[in-house]
Amino acid sequence: MTTKTAWITGASSGFGAAAVERFVAGGWRVIASGRRMERLQPLVARHGAGRVHAAAFDVRDEAAMRAAHAALPSAFADIDLLVNNAGLALGTAPAQQASLEQWKQMIDTNVTALVSLTHLLLPQLIARRGAIVNISSIAGSYAYRGGNVYGGTKAFVTQFSQNLRTDLHGTGVRVTSIEPGMAETEFTLVRTGGDQAASDQLYAGAQPITATDIADTIWWIANLPPHLNINRIEVMPVSQSAAGLQVHRN
Image (cartoon, rainbow, N blue to C red):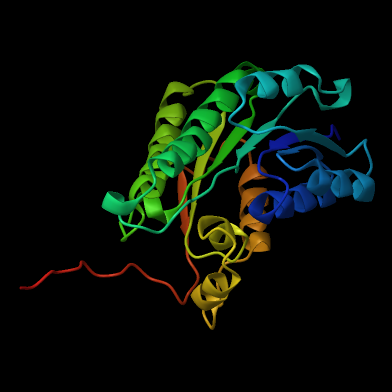
């Protein structure tokens, strides 16, 4: 059986790190990319350079992205699956109090970097009749206070996924948008600038989604028969459901 290769972005923590573990356990080769080589290198040490290739760069740096792609070892050069997982939320303030710098960083990471890597790999994915899994969020469907640009970027990811699916019709390439709800990773720590108490409070007693849950979901999607496509999948913990609309009263 031919070993397949996945490129997983944001592999230094959370969904990405868990997905690397799941795909390697399933016999795939994995290109694990992320900003922090000190987080990626243990993956290589644990599984071996023949199974995991670490590519350390900031996804917002397109030149570094292209250089990492050009430098792939021959064993990792044929890519069957792209998992666009790298992304972040910054800040919880309403729009009128939010940081424009943080807004731009979210757009550069969640949107521009995602489309740049996708565009770069499309010829290979088409040639191998591969698959693309984009990690979106329920924030792209359900508005909440402080979600502003983060929610907007994830709505883009969801719509971009659907449009990709349409454009790639007839190529055999599958495209999926996964839209998780509350998940306990480093997400809230990043969003709040390292506020552990805020993170603990958010997840306390909620039994949120875990990184392994999403890794298992990606694995299931990637290993479906090639004639099946999961267009969108929305995943919430049982403890979470869509909230009602807010009303301001005088």
